[in-house]
Image: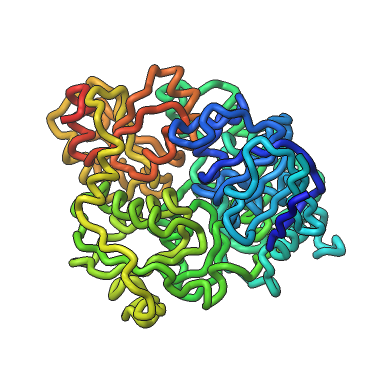
Length: 134
Length: 401
């Protein structure tokens, strides 16, 4: 199993399918949070469902709303399983802490080019690892 | 606090801060003088409002201990019929207002607190939400704040401190990207578009652009649009303007002389960004918001409305601190005589933008806010960026010139 080490991590151990793109992430700017899809037309994952998926993206973008929104999305079960970013801003970390969402960030190289779209991935925040298991 | 001696709300707040601080490797917590919370109910949802309600209900000690103020709400309660917002959304807003008020928070409902409430000073550590507020406070005032999302800003209000990482640290405030402005903007949306171009070049939260070459000192409103767009497009929280902003009297004050010029930004770069939000001429609605308008922006707008009769809705959004002055000085009357509406204490994109678009048949939205055009695409709008003058003409004629 190929493993990647993250510099920053929080949350629970999870396993699931990866949704990968070299693009940013903002819950307010990019998502139809009721429908559970990426809705910004110019986003590389436009139209894709994020529910139960591990999002592997470049960086967090945009405003502060994601700090509340991740918990609200989790309360309805329409939420990503985990977030894997090359870099994060404080909002995503605050939102993940508040919403109890697994978050890892900071890798050797560009993580969006190292995990194939659709691969099954396992994240262990305690070990700060991301593993491709299938 | 962690032992619960200050109550359950403070315990929960400090635990949250420790989790975030550990994630970013914060050595300790820094005392803050003010907090500013972004907490519109579209973001909170029912789950978030219920959580805030439970804080006050379950813990009599749950009160903020430093001055804590509020970002715009999701409605102007006096204008819900104009917006055709759903009743459930307005009800949720009322519940949120009551819950936050019980925690001792001042419902100032503004994203221009640095123009209207109390601007922080150089070196002052604060815990501000709203990216536009943070970038202006850090850059123009020289204050120290990270982006503090609603739960974290509320935690800072309850504990009076925040994790010491990011822009609370000297080393994080040094320039990392050197930009030369080969053209100085003219209009507010030019300033916003230049901020957006630089935000994209900077690329992430931790990058700090230093900009040289501007040919004049911008106004507060111009830097308001510049910073808000930079934060929106680039997730940026701090910029330096050589010879203008307080930490960059000289390029070398922020380490800029050690950087080679990453790019000279020309007028054509700004126009290219603006042209990405142009094309359609017909419009459904004109909105001035994000950030809320200052008294001076409303003065300009009122002058442009003279002698016109609008055929399309025109919404101008300001703060509850500015609105009474706009009323007293006749600005509101002049804008509304032409058929516009002056709304107070809300922000357009935080006011159930998707629902009001469907209720009103709004899709093509003209604005002079570069920040707003970046946001509204995700809500199903076709956002069109134009000058304030062009937007007013569009409200009168139904299409942009």
